Length: 273
Image 1 (cartoon, one colour):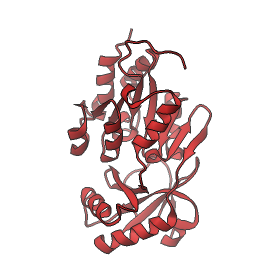
Image 2 (cartoon, rainbow, N blue to C red):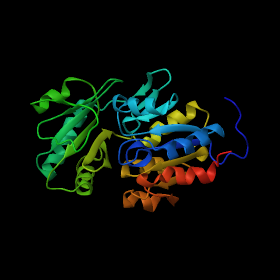
Image 3 (tube, one colour):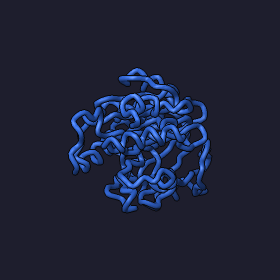
């Protein structure tokens, strides 16, 4: 790896996508593109760290001309965009997932469930009653919940109409936190992950491949699933539209994703020449 200039403030810029790098229209603004280009021109690496599976991240990476490493599926997948291949992939044990659902439902009542399938082309499959709040891409659907268990999965999504996202995440953690990880990654999106998996774990693996560490890293996020990454990084930035838990944990709160909050910080750190 080429040696970095000693004055470089951070050698790694880690950005979440939804609610962070992507604006409300699900695109990356020209200002944010310029700010990231200035950071990479100065010698910093940029890594996208998202809860999306690779199948739902590739079109964003392609629109950015992105050829580096991306951390997808809450850290379960490390993807090399330039080589178009998965470097790591972690799955959720299906027997454990079913047991976790049983324990949560004993507390919350019936859940609606969806699954993210494993693999580079693995898509999202909705179980009966699961409502997708918004999606740029089509999804699969099954009529019977048992059909969700026919292929390896990376994570589950759960919904309970009588509980808020925070309430559902809290109840799921209390009931099954010893079996699975529980995160909230967006409005209406509460997820069950392999125990111990997080964006921080995936990012640390990707950073290590680049010879970089937490101290080299500035990270940007907006939701509770970004907390491990914000805590891991040498400097954590919450978006102005972020969940309050992330704002409390971050070193800095920037402008919202609609106001190019990432660019606001990067322009200060990596002024364009």
